[in-house]
Image 1 (cartoon, one colour):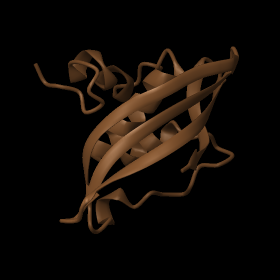
Image 2: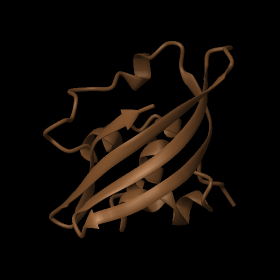
Image 3: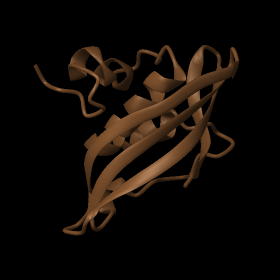
Image 4: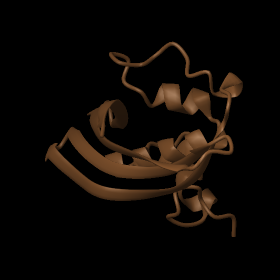
Length: 125
């Protein structure tokens, strides 16, 4: 078994499915797959799952220094105000270089278009 970086199960049956092109069935599944994509350096996937209205031209993951070491993910809340919008609150733990562990707490907004969930933006606290 190859554990998924999001901590939810086996990679092939968890985020690996979404990374291979199958649409994530929920905004939470997409958010977990995006966390795993950051861990694995899958910049193309991250950009493809980012809504065009807020998508950056690039993320620079390959040249980022220092590179983060991702330590884990906790989903705090997932709600759907409408069938095609969602909010996912999560905490990602990481370490930059040899520094102390940090927490990134974000409340993210998602929208579903043409049957696919897309990340729009988020508030980091």
